[in-house]
Length: 191
Image (cartoon, rainbow, N blue to C red):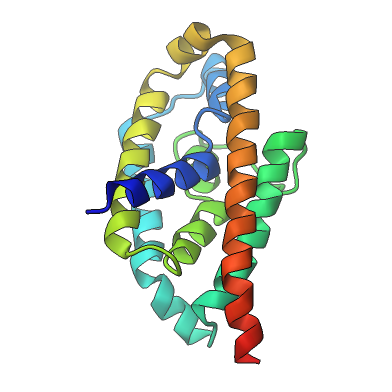
């Protein structure tokens, strides 16, 4: 196992899932009386993400889309996700809070379109074993944050939460640029 690659993929997924950036949302939901079942949330999100990770190629083939095209499209989605984090704007609407465990926490907050796109796009650069390991490690972090969200927010404070969100937004932006650059040439040579 290439642990440097696992760390790289872990960081990309950590930035996309943005559990620490979602901390204020989790705390607000809990303070408003919503219950969040960490085990159920992670189980649902894991199922969604691993299905797309392993069946993503099959789904792409159904629509006659190659990995390079999907990776370029995914890099554009990552670009907008990173800009959301850096500029504190909301490009992706529709986050409802009817059921905190499933919606919006499991989907789309954890297993959202950005993460699904990223999982499939990363397969253009990394083996599935590396991605699966990095995803598992991220889901462990998600579980811990869900379980202890109020205590973590109190411990870290607003300033550290703000700095982490901006830092991971910039990391995600750099990864989007790299993914775009490494896959656009393959697309241009195909045509």
